[in-house]
Length: 163
Length: 109
Image 1 (cartoon, each protein chain N blue to C red):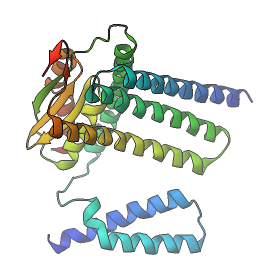
Image 2: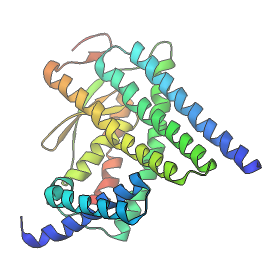
Image 3: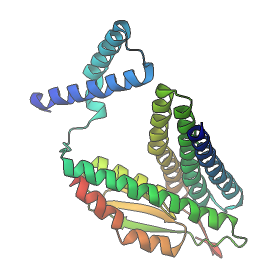
């Protein structure tokens, strides 16, 4: 890892940790601020490469905006997923037909893949079981939700943010 | 005065909806046939249930004028949404690697 990449990462992690300290302590007197600053700098020095990995995620207003749009889209889908599961749970005959489908992803970055796997778990009728190389193994509650996933709408939205 | 009553009603609404999703998740846990299908119910239901109850609490905290508590509750909400699907995925993955089979309608695979 090259040295000039380390410094911005160290600063970014310090700022994140210090913000989190402020959030949890909510005391703004000099003593608490100094303690928080010292401990966040120390932790960032020791473990900044754990929080942000080597790959770079370029921040641009367009990406942040599409990430916010994606969050709204995801929240809507989470509500749909829960109504779907509630319907299947409460239906007397339990209309489920489980199957495991394979889903090949084009996403390269780790963060993008993690978010995709989490989104698969939270959206209607699908739960991510395993990732081997490029292939996601997804457990689907019904054929319809499997087809919905294989259409790759969610992946397309994430591609715009992370690639 | 009226505003505070409206905020109270909204927060109660959020908490009741959250409780509804918790209840369906629990019924699903009891009714569904195997681990994967049960995780469908709990992985989704618990996440949204906990999220909605926390949002209800945050609205209640705003109403009571507790800013720091509101921010903290909302950050708990973010962490629940980030970690709960990971936990469901971890349980699924272990079982799939160890057993490699799952319940299918009308027979075994």
